[in-house]
Length: 190
Image (cartoon, rainbow, N blue to C red; front, top):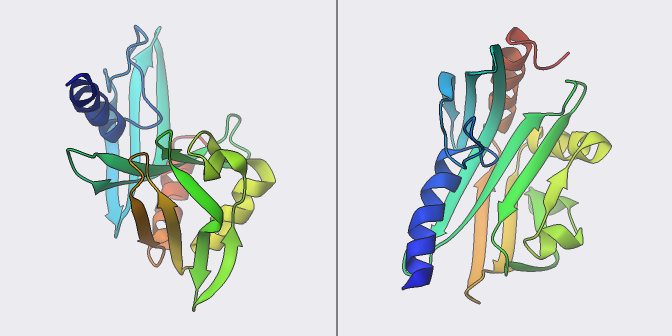
């Protein structure tokens, strides 16, 4: 019963908020973020929002995809956010997976025309702990995503169930272009 309550409480927060957005009191909630832009490119959502923080207007833009691949009672989900790095000189790709998710090496990958063109064997990605790509590794991953194909994830979820997810990348480059345009218009990237 406690697990069910926890999941019902946690899931709406994860699905509705990028990177566990916090309100001004530090609560994990969408708080007072106002959406100023939203556009959908297949599975990829390009979003921008803003809020006042101590008299300053704070703006952000991101690309996201949230995949709820297993409904209750054995709820499980995976998500991805692309955001500008602090300082606006690069980009970060952040995957969210539940603790207990386990990938075998080579099963967290991008495939194009039946060939693996990118993969991660980073322990944080293979174990559902911390799966983030920034700086050069973020740029390499974004380039691979922009070239199309499919993100492929073959793993065991936190319930021990075998999962095989495919995220099409055909529209990612289009989403990327809009994300850059909107981020530049708000001074978030150089």
